[in-house]
Image (cartoon, rainbow, N blue to C red; front, side, top):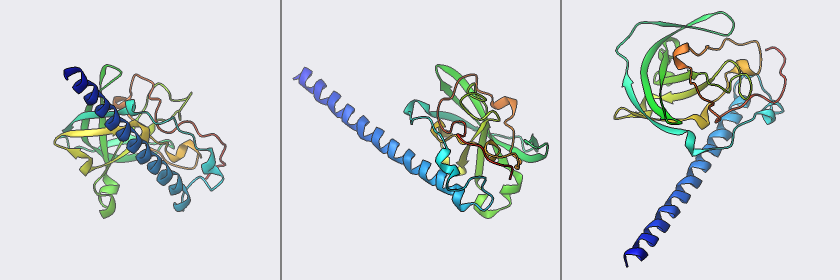
Length: 205
């Protein structure tokens, strides 16, 4: 009976894992569709309907979904983040996410834009600009971003899904001012998840 019970339990766990995996894949597919269609809805978008067909992504992989310990920042000082065209944008450090990736403990700082904080619909918007070892070869050389909301942090825990890493508009055109990820958000690994290098050429915006 003990062996039979273990076999049944193992089968149940595998079945639940399979269902969970399918649900996560479907959720990711929905996100990717929403992300892609967003280019057509934004009047400042660098891509048209033909351009979005050249977007490229790594295959979805649950290994790139990590749970991080989140610490809110007590430093309210303004952080000046440089941008791709030499301008500067003002942010504050919202907090720090600590997690394990490939067996290595890592940290990423979560930032909040002072400008967006004044806009009601974006008042709870924060983001993670980061670099990794794929930049310039498999992914955009200027790094990638992850978007979050305040509510994504629960009991000092934050789920980071690198499958949702996306390129700034500067990856498609020179006519934009995109925040450059700070050195503190440099990951010493290849994050082979999320959006890859763009597959086409786009004229200046």
